[in-house]
Image (tube, rainbow, N blue to C red; front, side, top):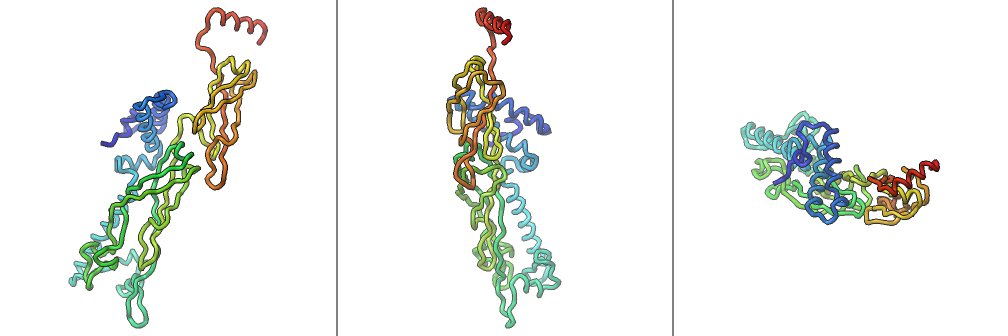
Length: 335
């Protein structure tokens, strides 16, 4: 059973955006894998918390989630399917009302043609000899939201998209009618819906808002024209450690007070592991070091951005008598 995102974050359904952010940050600090190395339970909880935050912190996604629950990612497809079902029902009813069982076109879908002959002319086209030919039109594009982690954006990743695809009706071949009567399989629409699983690849370096085009996986074309495309609309989830600006990453690195004063080396986490940073003597709190080429991959060219590590001097939590005496001596010396 899918988990309730509000329960995962421990907030009420009417919680404000600020309350959602506060709850996420508190849980992320507690559950992050860097804080709980090797703890699979904490790692799983952290993923749930991050997924819940990604939806509830976005007003549009939250609206879809409130309406459709764990099917929120397919909201656009569900609404489109409902719209098309409504159109088919309307058209089927109009055909029955005509008294002869023939299909009647809704002129509002075809540019407002004023008469039935004009509608047939627009939809099928007519040659001078009265023969009917199907109008050619490329299929429309469809958009599919996809959420990925920062690590997946760094490496590139794949997804299995479960979708409701439209295909030409196998009974009438997409014409909407058989021997002048409305096709009973597609109710005159000419297309049917089929569930489908599609394997897609997402390149390294994508950012929130990137659109990855999957050719010919959109709406079907008419009259033998090609299908439209599917556009994967990417959202990269926020990371509890790294802040991303373009292809550069920013983070804070804890440095012991003695290392900041005397100099030394500290470990700096990166997306792929840890590196050693040489800290010069008397490094001031807040100083930022740039580590070239350790940021995110560039999407449209070779290379990577940079990693900016900001020093956060870590004070001792308690002092013994000897340490206290040394600090008093430093104070007396005006340091």
